[in-house]
Length: 155
Image 1: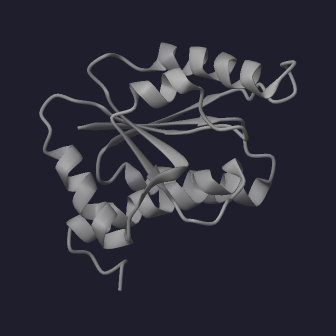
Image 2 (image 1 turned 45 degrees about the vertical axis):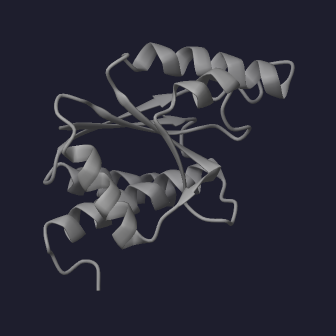
């Protein structure tokens, strides 16, 4: 199965970008993995709603009707690392679907993106800026893959 991670906005901090690149490279060992970054509309739109709608329009261009779309949102379902690995296994068992995880911008997702999602998950009850969320999520996705393979990364 192919896995795609779509994010909004580039990492401004070099250390976060370096960490992200490290885990993206590691993911290649487990799946066909790719990332796409869509520019943030935070400073380009007149309102929060306009920014979310513009980002949603760009996100919709990157996904197809058959894709399994999982949004990362603070109101989503919480998982432990082991529970998330089990959920990823369920996704992997779905034939012919591309797994698309989407980390939104600083304002979250427009209603049409929330409606399109097959599932919404949360990294934590705490709030992280979206740049840190990108790194934290990718590490958790990598961790899930190592758990599924029985590798010692997760203790």
